[in-house]
Image 1 (tube, protein in one colour):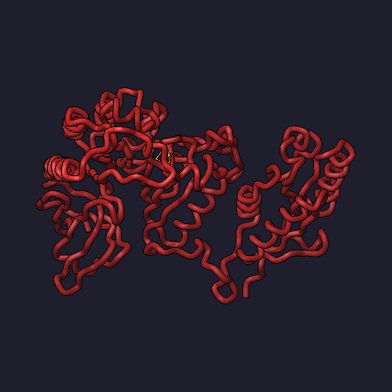
Image 2: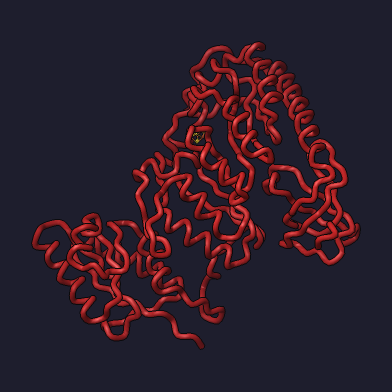
Length: 442
Ligand code: SF4
C-alpha cells in the first residue's frame, strides 16, 4: 500500500492560532495526510506563526529557521504570514507563506509541495470531493456573498458581503476536479466579475508562481486545465472585455451568463442593478465583433414595480437587438425584507402574465434565429445521457449550460457514452435545441 505523505506541524501563539492549526490538520487528515512527531519523519513542515509582539515575531522567525535546518522543506502560515517580505528576507528558502485563517491557501500550498496520494482503500473521500453532478461536469464556486444591493434581493442579508476564495485554492480544486473526470467546469458565485475585490486581488501561490485573485487571471489559469470553462453570473463591468479575448482564443467557452434582469434605464435604476450605467448594448456588439461565436444567456424580470408598457417594449427591442441567445423570464414576486417591497406602481397580475408571454415569444424567436445559424457546422458536444432505445445521445454544445439551456440531440449515437466529448455535424435546429449526427472525424 502507498505510504501517506507526512507533515510536521509547529504551532505557535494564542489559542486562536491553535484552533487554526487544528482546522488545517483536520482538513489535511481527511485528505489522507498523516503527521510526524519529529522533523526527520516529516516530508514537509508547517509552521503556524504568531506575530502579535516583537518577541513573538522573533520566536516565529527562529522556529522557521529551526524547521529549515532540521528538515529543509517549510511552509509558513499564521499571523506573521502578513509580513511576507520579512520572512522571505530572513529565510528565502521557505516554500510558501500565507496569513492567518487562510486555510485554503495553506492546504493548496501543501498540495503543491507535497501532493496528496489518493488511496482508494483508505480515503474517506474521492480526491475531487463528493459531487451531486455527473462526473463529467462540476460547479466551481469562487466566492460567497455579494457587495451589490439590488432592491429585489436579500442575498447580501443572508450570505453577507462578497468573500472571495484565494485563487490558488480555486485552481487546486479545479485541477482535482479535472483529474477526477470533469470535462467542464462551471464557474459560479453571486457576482463572478467582482471576484477578488474584497481581498484586494491578493495573490496566492499556485504551482510556484503568484496568481492574483482577479477575474481575468483566474479565467486564464482555468483555461489552461484542458476542460471546458463556462462563466456564470458575470456583470458587464468594463474588465469583462479582457475575458472575451480568452473566448476568442478558445481558452474559455464563448458563453456568458449575465443576469441583466431588465434593460430600461429607469427600471434598472429602481432595481439598483450593478453596472447599469454602462452602454451595455455597445459592449455586446463589440464582444460579438471580437468573438462571433459568443452565446449570451440572461434572465429577465417582468412586472417589476413601476415598469411601464414603454419600459417593457424597450426591453423587448433590447433583447432582439442584443440577440440574447438564451433568455429566462420571471414574473416579479416580492421577497420578505427586500427594499423593492416599498416601491409604488404594482403591476397587475394579468399585465404581468401578458408581458411574460410576450417576452418568451420574442426570446424564442431570437433563439430560433441564432440556432439556425449553427446548421451545417461541425461542433464538439459533451454527452450528458444516452437514449439506447432510440440510439441517440443527449449532449450539449459550448453554447449550452446544463439544466438551463438547450440540448444537442445526436442521432445514430452508436458507441457514444455519457461524458464523451464528440464531434458532430449539426443537421437541424428548432426553438431551443440542435439536432446532429456524429461527424466523420470521430
Ligand atoms: S441580485 Fe443583486 S444583490 Fe442579489 S446576489 Fe445578485 S447582484 Fe447581489
